[in-house]
Length: 313
Image 1 (cartoon, rainbow, N blue to C red):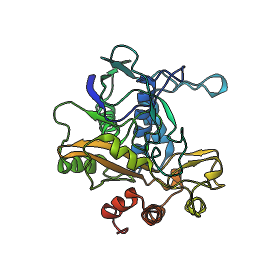
Image 2: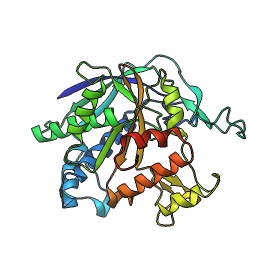
Image 3: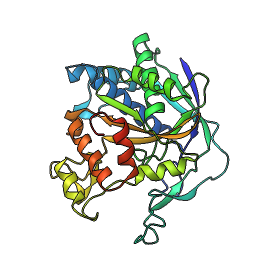
């Protein structure tokens, strides 16, 4: 099996290796995303025994133990992830991770939190190759579903849950209309606890859409008591440190994930809800409540979500 995907960055990629000021399109980071989506989709496929999830996971991605943790079932991964056709030269530039901040009254220089990034518009090729006897038909089908879910619903790098690192597959046959996209996503997520919605407002440039994604409500430093409200809702937007409900440790990824997608009429925001309550500790009611908080705070994201998420309008 040899698969190749031409992929374009729709928004800046904040992903680095050993050097903080040198952003990279890293095969290891892509592999991590594929592993996450593979596990997430399997977790929700009515597989009641976690051992079956781990068995399928190990069969594709490998499992290497050490010392007392090693088992006879440990083996290397059957999947090789490579990245090719990378742009020549150092493309690093400092771009805002919080693009909605500049120009707001009361903001200070640096509040937009600039970091080294690969700018939008760069194109690369993702190569997926099997080895060690190859993949079974079931494994190849599961991998194909995983790749499609990641490219249509996920992202890459830091702040990818808030619109950064959004990707678009340039291969023939991938959806370009909202109808085709929605139908494909519905098929991919069938039987899972994930839900996805295409938000209604089109944007002529991706950065305008990313500003809406990052303009949410935060923790203790936010105005009013929004931070306390988020804690009571078990942080459905994620958080770090003192922002978090005591039930969580130092960091919680956001169960509400936002990415960009380019349709024929422009860029749109895709909202993805991770409904695995056993993993996120959040329910659909928490999503409904945080959408109301966003709308009450005057956030465009909240008003758009109210138009597409049932039970919130």
